Image (cartoon, rainbow, N blue to C red; front, side, top):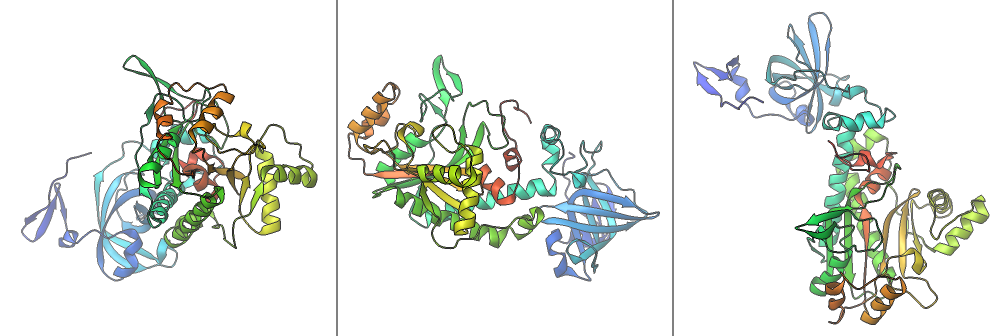
Length: 450
């Protein structure tokens, strides 16, 4: 891109990178979304050429900036390729058929940075049912599409609302290591790295650290990527994703943790309604409604309902994807809720730090939203002897967990927490079928670029 050269005054006209422009170009830049405030006035726009049409001497250009799109009408101009960066000076007039109800009748068009070739994918014609691999291969350009960026805007507002809700409840944001000596959950789904000749891993969760920080601040949260070396090839999994983690001390049970998550979700939904109406409309998405408390139903009861009502036989210890979908439909029909907490998981289906009863059940839960799990959480073990027993009974060594275990010698209170996958929540709110399109640059088992 060319280096910026400041405008200079020259005999009542403005010289701008060698182009002669009218005096009106000195006006402050106006965003597309604000055109209605300038009807009948001359404005200066800057943005990207989204689409262009030439109708025999009259040209139409749709300009995209950070606020949205605007229609520009020109006469006798040479239109640059799509995605070129341009500046337009012209008069704002009312036009019912134009985006936002106004268009700009241009007097000047200045190319700030010309595209040298057409985009590999025609952005205005991109459909979500197009080959997803092609769209992801060219993500560095396709991410500029209106729907793609709308999803990321929703996610940005969602994450900010997550922070707002917790800060209002006296939580403190923390920042934990992403290079660790052992996995938080055990197992083999860890990315191993060479750490100066020592074996280390990318963090699969901030779990152990956020528990430690409960001893410092009582209530903590983190927004950060986590890494799972799982060879999934599904529309709902990523190997790197944004985890919204929460942990709080002095809980009486896992119900206290679910109460906090419910309040957080209510705040997120409210903020999305206030700030993302255009983005939601682009997807035809309806926000979930809250009518009373989110239902809380034990896992074994959920499995029974799915089997008896829908005839679906469930294998394993959890709910499989089809069972999640069916049970969510049951809850929607019976309670009118898009959310449901599934509680009381067996020890064998939960990490070693999950608080357990002698009947083999844990004080843990998953949160299903419109048929997909978006949260795991629950009360944690706070007693050192119980923790050591849990490790031992799972055949896990205390090696690598020494610092974590040391904390429990020093008065850790009953505590619990949860983690939300930001991409999954975004995708379910917007109805995006593949979670990879709810992340700017997704990482799955095959993709390291762009």
